[in-house]
Length: 448
Image (cartoon, one colour):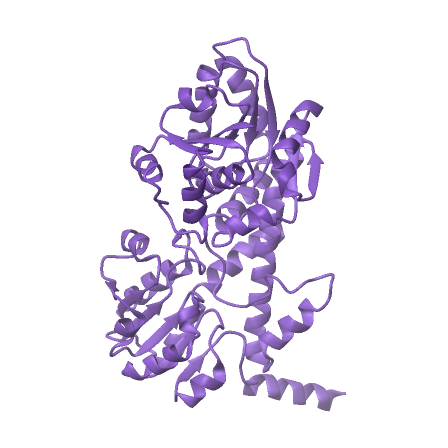
């Protein structure tokens, strides 16, 4: 099929490249001339494993092209995917200006019947609003069908997820639109769930909010484990073996970040507020995550008291490994908090240094390697679980520190290796039973 993709960010570009890979003829359009120039030259403007190779392959097969012209992109398109960014607005709701501009372009330039597919994450009811907007903008007497088709791609695994997803959600109001979109995805052989449009829009928010809740829950359990002498890895493993719970997203750490979870949690809270409903659980999820991102700072303050003049190495800046995305990354919170307390901060990430320089405060020193960041450091904060930090060579690099103190925000280091290297090691969710707790337990036993 002839497909146009509006937007060449993580979702739009991955979707376009992968649809070309399964045999469709895809044109991606974006108003960013610089980005389109890079893509036309075969360069992916962000880090996503496997994407550059697929892009080059499909360009050579002439099944994938890029343009800044909506008229050219829509000229023969049978299906148009809207995959533009919907960043968080000042009021907590997604900013839909790019989406409405794309919809207006469809109205102006479409000259044949077409299916418009909303893949961007949008508040419930947005697809219906776009339907009315496009109808009022149509310059030619054509039939425009609509579908909501939320994405469930994980940054760092987006290409894999496209070909091996758990499900494809197709929200439509008419059979022909559902049939067309099902035909687009047929080569993937992934289970398809058909719903109405509003339910499809809600599925995306509900899924991300639930995963965010799971992360915040296990972090609360981890914090309690530290106080009661339990080990969070064992607790999480025991929970995850229950098929009703599952093991994924039960890894304790310094909280979630990225472009989806924080934004989608806030948007769902705002949608609930506007409907007159108090979403208490989700409010707590957001509060827990905000507190969790400062947990390592609290540990450092407890260790030293005054952090002024201490050299702190931040290792891993992206919100997760295998991506250069710095949006809502916990490293941003940690860096600012350390600087506010008078510490010196040296930062390193194997991939995201370019993005980090634009987002981290100017006082942060950027190191060319983990070894350089660790040189003379009083402590290291491991904030992203990059593989290079779990290799034996990393443990040896810790010898370059002034004081071998490590705060592990992802519980990704081997505690036994840290002990062998003489490292003072602070993970999350492992601790000794405190004296006040022991006293309370003994008192309760005596009362019985």
